Each structure stands twice: as structure tokens, then as C-alpha cells.
Image (cartoon, rainbow, N blue to C red):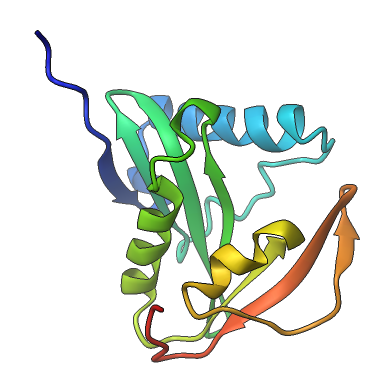
Length: 153
């Protein structure tokens, strides 16, 4: 009997990503955002390689199962590209990534643009809606902000 493989948390800057991992990250983002959600947009937007960007993901072996990135935007940390592979959903990986992202961010304020139906998920991590709903790539979104030094609910 083989033990169940476990998900390993990994964190890296762009320059520390090996090509196989980068490929797996971009593949997952494309599978979910471009194919599953039917949004035709350029996912590799140039921001992945910025010096202040941190990439966080859970992997089983080489397979990336959940991912997010943190961008440094003029003193505010921007969480984005939060994604979980279809076969890994329901295991709590996105929540564990959010908790780790907030520990990386520390006391600095953070923002994100949430798909509107996920606003409640992000509210559990101290994010509040800060503007009206808007449509991006055919999906309703809301801007959300988390002030620095917010406790996780």
C-alpha cells in the first residue's frame, strides 16, 4: 500500500523558478482561466518576471495543483492569479495559499480583484469590497482591499 502523495508548499521569485515548474504554472493558469472559464486573454502579462513578484504554489511532484502570485505595486501587495486545478478543488489548497500569502505580506496592505462569486471566500482573510462590480473577460469582479495588520477571521 502506497501512502497518499501530499501537497508541498513552494515559494519562489521568477528567477528561482525552473523551466518545468514555470511551464506547469502557466499550463494550470491557461487550463482554468483561458479554457475552463473561456476567457481569451494574454495570461503571461509580463508581471511574473518582475523582481518583487513572489510565486506560491502547492505541488505533488512536478504537478502544480494550486497557485497564486503576489505582485509589489508601489507599497501595496497585489494578490492575483489564484487558481486550483479541477482535481484538487475542495482540499483547502486555495485557503492555505491565502494564509501563507498573508504571512509573506505581513503588515503591508493588500489588494486583489476577486471574481464576484468568490468575494465571501476572500472576506474570510480580511478583504473588503472597495468598489462597484465590473465585468472583466465576461466575468463579474469586485475590487477588494485588506488593510495592513488585519487578523485572519
